[in-house]
Amino acid sequence: MAPLFDAVICQKANEFPADLLFKKRPRRKDILKSFTLTHGLQSITDAISVQPKISIIKGKGVQTVATDNDLFHLTTGDGSTYTAQTLGVATDAIAAARLLKAPFPELSEQLSKIQVSTVESVGVALKRKALSLPPVAGLIAVEDSFYSAVSAIPSSMIPTGASVFISRRECSPMKQNLGASPTCLK
Image (spheres, rainbow, N blue to C red):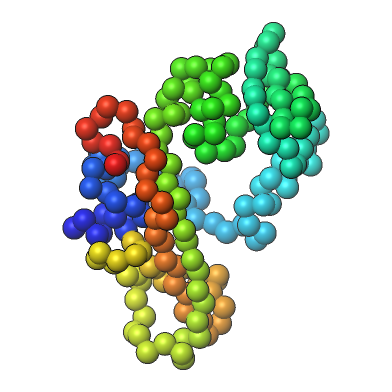
């Protein structure tokens, strides 16, 4: 069963907490479970960026975050400073923990416990006539360089006459541990 569980989360599941892997969540019929954005995820940030009182500054890495009088003060790598009433952090947990260490030490400590793994996803589209394999929903590797490959993609996203396979594999080992819990990823 291990290869199946590895394939589900695209990493070794040996010590992954089973209650997280199989957690039953209430289903809400009023919320879409699957949809496609015509122009991809970029359309979300594009829509946000044109809202009044929203400024998007690109190409400047934030080096420090500080708070004072209910304001956030950010300093970038080039020494520029920015002040805002609201701060949104959109980065990986390791970078967020570093940025938030001074103003929010408890949050930073919790974020630093989150493991980060790089997963590579590769999409391939082939003409159905070029394949000698029968149609499959997916493949699960046993002791191989990938975890899974799926072909169950909405037909609206597949070009006419093509079969699509997406392969996922972990590219680097976990760098951190989720605290002292014995049921954590390693």
